[in-house]
Length: 116
Image (cartoon, rainbow, N blue to C red; front, side, top):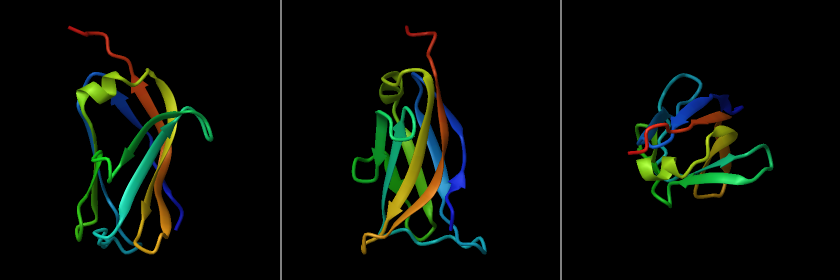
């Protein structure tokens, strides 16, 4: 299965969350209990790492039998991101080390105007 394509925006200085549901071709949620998740945001394909989110680092929560994945950054973490347009992909890895690229696309980080 090919990775889905989805682009999104993160607003600097705000708490950010995105919820995804991993489903099969018939629309049934896939149990992701035994998976780990990892997402890199980079300046370009093969470029500098801007931010890593992972299930082991706590930025990605894996939902289990409902197939949910919740990605989250705090306002402090988004403030540390430089405004710009970047690329990302989100991969899931099972206990046999099989990796699935779930989704990929562009991330736009919008700068913060009000800082007080």
